[in-house]
Amino acid sequence: MAGIPGIGSGIDINSIVGAMVNAEKAPKEAQLARLEKASTTKFSALGELKGALSAFQTAMKDLNSLALFEKRSATSTNASALTASASKTALAGSYQMTVERLASSSKVATAALASDFTAAADGKLTVKLGAADAGVEVDIASGDTLVQIRDKLNTALKDKGITANVINNPADGQSRLVLNAKETGAGKDISIETADAALAGLALDGSVQSTGNGAGYLQQAADAEFTVDGLALKSPSNTVDNAIPEVTLTLSGKTEADKPLTLTVDQDKSGVTANIKKFVDAYNKLIKTSNELTSVTRIGEDKPPVTGGLVGDATVRTLLGAVRNELVSPADQEGVRVLADLGITTQKDGTLKIDDTKLGKALTDNFDAVGTFFAGDTGLMSRVDKRIDGYIQTGGVLEQRMSGLQTTITGIDKQREDLTRRVAQMQARLFAQFNAMDSLVSRLNSTSDRLAQALGSLPGVVKQSS
Image (cartoon, rainbow, N blue to C red; front, side, top):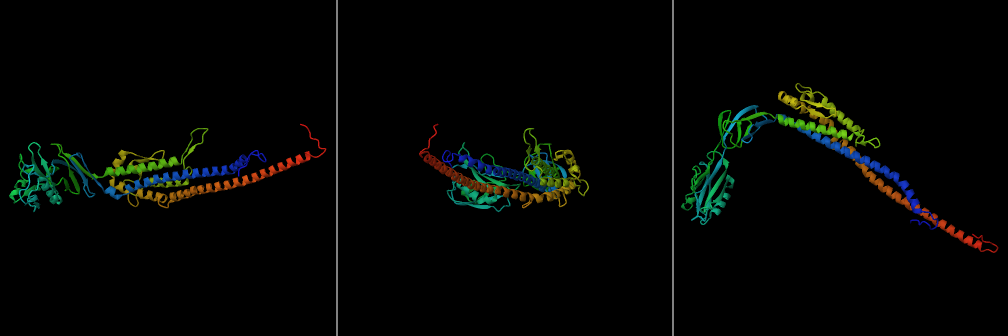
């Protein structure tokens, strides 16, 4: 119960109790706030360090792959006409190539028919894809319209890769069935045969060109025609396997006359270069992150410095020291022994820098040595990974430290709850004590006043005038 100033003792009990409670509470609250800030800052800093380490480990994993150094590139100087891919067993080489013609599929049309054409009687259509094809029989019913015939053809021919549609001519009101084949290559022409006179208007020979409103091909099936170093070659598909052993060619357009393209099959230097740069970038990010987390920055003579979350942290020093030791440790091989042999050097701030010219020369002159330097059980990537894995793996050093900090932060909340409860009990006790004192003083004052009145009314007592 709160005291009331002016009653009883006349003391401001609220102010006195408030001051005593604050004197008890404020230092502990400040202590908990400092501990929470320090723990949260360090927790966030360790998380940031762990993220940079994880990115670094991922970059190393990509580079620590012998398959990366087994890949072959196939580069065309005219990608609009030809692209290619090569397996790891493809031999290096350079080829002059032309694309004379792309492989095409059959597109045919029936003779022009009235737009209201209907089948005069039941019958069958046999659709073939090439002369040697047994064909697919499609039942047509009397009265079927062109649209109904189209739908029956599409249902029957879907597994054969042939589609049909109706094309209408607004000028003369006539219609034609048009069929398209998916499969390319010479001899894969669509033909429609029928023994039924009522369906004779739907028959067509796909090897004969359509002229005017007559039946025949609109586009004839044909092989792709191309040359490799002057040798004339053909392919039923625009995707060509093994014209050059272990190389897949994709033809997509004709080359200009007297302007051959060059196809170069080689070791995949660009892919290796990209992964080396990704490794260097990830390492530089790790170094910059570590520098920021361990730095002390002065911002003025009268202001406290800004400090990173891991200033003076032994974990960071130990970790980076171990990684740097591996980076400068020479490999037991010829050709490429240290990063400097690849044009990768350390700058003043601890980050790495790549000399692209020197790296390119090393990949050209010592490609296999670059692979064994980086990849494999004894390669640089494996050695560095072993140094950092214990820090970022599940249950590793950083996770354990972060778990401990999380426990501390959770404990701070519990301490705050305990402090609030203890302060409330202290406040209640102080109010009870001060109110009891106030009540006692009030009673004593009352007794004093009554005694003074009684004494003042006795005979012979002369009151002193004011």
